Length: 159
Image: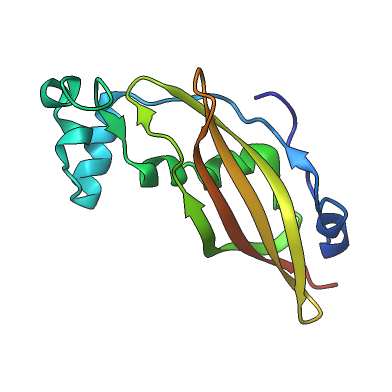
């Protein structure tokens, strides 16, 4: 990993990070086995993902990973950038805008950068945090995924 994760322990700590880019994370390589396992798990067996022979003659010259497979790396990659152990809990609340501007070829390496773009307090002890995640693929100018992740953070109660 390129750096030690940040460890905010209060909503104010997270508010101070608005506009700060975190990362990048470690690289993640995409083998065909991961694509096949994701296809089996989700039932998405489109040939562009799972048929290397047919995909070799297709528009990308080989198989590509599912966009949602790349997106699913977001939580683990976020934990490389920021640890939430200072909170009572941090929950994935969902996503706003999600885009896949470029396909991710089999064998490629991806990493993520994240920018906290909004913190909205929810009551006295919680906040909704929006983080823009950008997944960059080695050797490709466009990102392969850009997503606005939303989390809910609750501070530890004073004991």
